Length: 50
Image 1 (cartoon, rainbow, N blue to C red):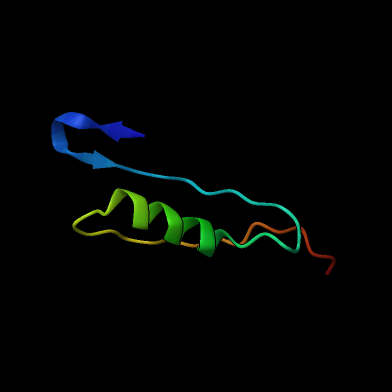
Image 2 (cartoon, rainbow, N blue to C red):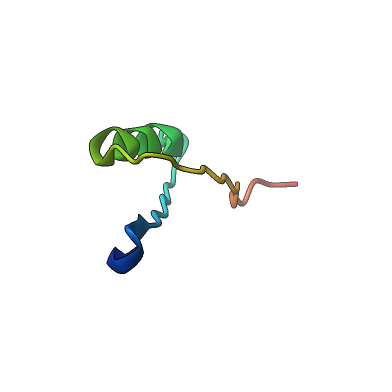
């Protein structure tokens, strides 16, 4: 999602599977976009058996 007039963007990273690491994907995006600042929120939405 981007708001060019504010020079602002948000990125959602969704992964699935045990071998996926959303933190690696996030770090790659940050390294490519080189933002002046960023905030990282993490939500675990896995459906692990209780």
